[in-house]
Length: 293
Ligand code: NDP
Image 1: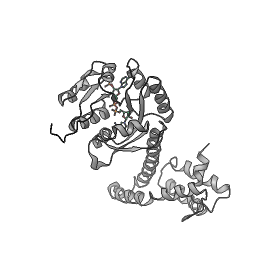
Image 2: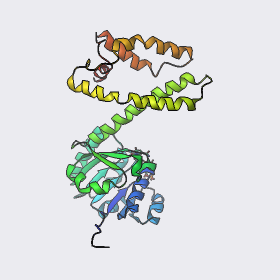
Image 3: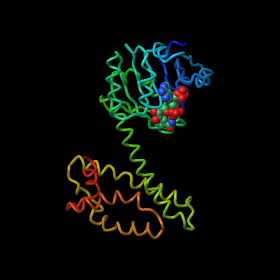
Image 4: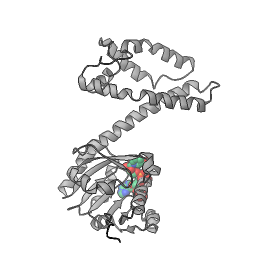
C-alpha cells in the first residue's frame, strides 16, 4: 500500500440474491473487504471466488464489521435473519424494499438494540449496480451521521441520495417514483392496445411514445409549483374543463378499437369529479386532493 492509498472500509453484506450479489461484486471490485452471509450458503460461492469471506451465520457476519448492509427479500426476512445477531454499536444499512412504516419500525427496532440505522430504496436493477453511467442510485433516510460516515462506501455500487432523518422517507420516495412509473406503463399499455389489431408496427409507435412521455414529464414541475402555492390555476395551459370535454374521444376510440377502458376510466372519473366541484379553470393538479383521504 502506498502512502497515499486510503484503506477502504470493510463491511458485511447479508443477502446474496440478484441484488445483494450485484452489490457485493461492486464492493469487491473496488477493493473493499467483504464478509457475506446468505441463508442458502451455496449462493455465496461466486463472491467467495472473487475474494469475499463467508460467514456461517448472520450473527457471525454482523460481528465481523461495524458496517452491516442487509439486502433481503422483505422486512420479515430481515427480522428473521437478524433475530440472533448482536447489533450493539453496528451501523445497519437496510436496502431491503419495504413500506415507510416498516422502515420506521425497523429503525426503532435497531435503535433498541444499540445500532444506528439507515434505510435505503434502490432505484436500479442489478445490471445497473457498479455501472455509474447507468444513473442508478439509492435513496437513503434515517441516521445522517451514519450516512455521512459511510457515504463513500455506499456510493460504490450506485449513486446516493439522502432524503431525510425520517427512516421512512427512502421507502416513501422509492414507492412514489415506482408508482408514477406504473402509471406510465399503464398508459403505454393502453396505447399499444389501441394499435394492436391494426397494420401499425409497435416498433414504430415505441419511439413516438418514448419521446412524447419524455416531453410531457416536465409537467410535474408545474404541478409541484401549484401544490406549493395552493393556486391550481397558476400557469394552466390546458384547462380541466377542456380536458374533460375530450374524454369521450378517448373512450370512444378505445371502444372503436375493441380495447378495454379499464386503465383510463379511473383517472377520467377523478377528472370529472373535480370538474363537478366547479374547478374547470384548473388543470389536473386537483385530482391529487381527491386522492388524499
Ligand atoms: P432475490 O429474490 O434474488 O433474493 C432474495 C434474498 O432474500 C435471497 O438472498 C434469499 O435467500 C433471501 N431471503 C428470503 N427470505 C429469507 C428469509 N426468511 N431469511 C433469510 N434470507 C431470506 O431478491 P433480490 O436480491 O433481487 O432483491 C433483494 C431486495 O432488493 C428486495 O427487497 C428487492 O425488492 C430489492 N430490489 C431488487 C431489485 C431487482 O431488480 N432485483 C431492484 C430494486 C430493489 P436464499 O438465497 O436463501 O433464498
